[in-house]
Structures are given as structure tokens and as C-alpha cells.
Image 1 (cartoon, rainbow, N blue to C red):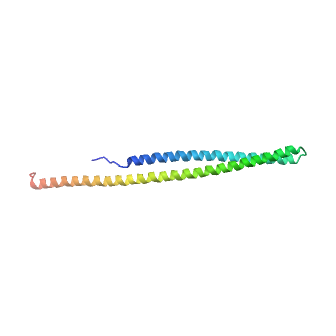
Image 2: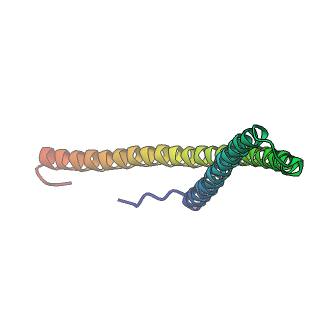
Image 3: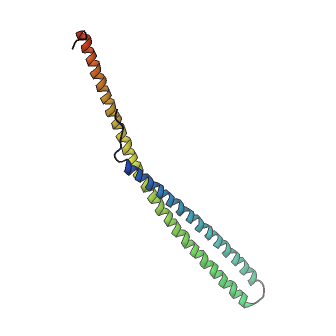
Length: 152
């Protein structure tokens, strides 16, 4: 019985490595997206606190310079929130691209695996036919020997 050999095994192994790499890239992109989302949440919290402090400062008579400083501080916090939102969107786009590449790599790997499975089934069927042919030939020889009394 001969051994099953899938001629595209090297390509299949390459596809597996490409899929693993794509999944690593996807994982890293998702981690960066989580960090960006956390930074956005922190920036939004800081903006909320800045607005709260500014309301308190507005209610108290005091220095106009301090009020201007609060307004500028709030504008800075708003800009920080805007930058964080932009960063989150960029990371989401990166994750979507990485997800598409990972899905494509998986599809290519699965295609080769299906091809290998079909080739294996065909090989098994050919082996079964060869084995059956050998059995039939042996049975024919024995039948002929039995009929002729063991003489050819």
C-alpha cells in the first residue's frame, strides 16, 4: 500500500502560517483599539470634570483670568476628546482591515484543506479498488486451481 502524498502540502502549510500571522495582526489591532477606546473614555471623563469645575467657578465671584483659564482648559479637553475619537476611528478601521485579511487567509486555508480532503478520499477509493482487484485476482487463481485439481 502506497503512502498518501498531498502535492500542495507546502502551500497548505504556507496558508496556515499566513492565517496565524493575520490572526496575530488582528489581535494586536484589537488591543490598540481597546487602548484608544480607554483613552477616549478617560478624555471624556476629564472633559466632564472640567465642565463641572467650570460651572462651580462660574457660580462664585472671582478672577476673570481664572474663568478664562477654565474656558481654555475646557477647549483643550474638547480637543483631546476629538483627537481620541479620531484615534478610535482609525483603530476601528485598522481592526476591520485586519479582520478582512484574517478572514481571507482563513478562506484560502480552508480551500486547500478541502482540496486535500478530496484528494485523500480519491486516494482511499483508488487504494480500495486496487485491493479489491488483488483480492479478485487471488480468488480467480484459487478457483481455477480448485477446478483443475491444483494444476495450472
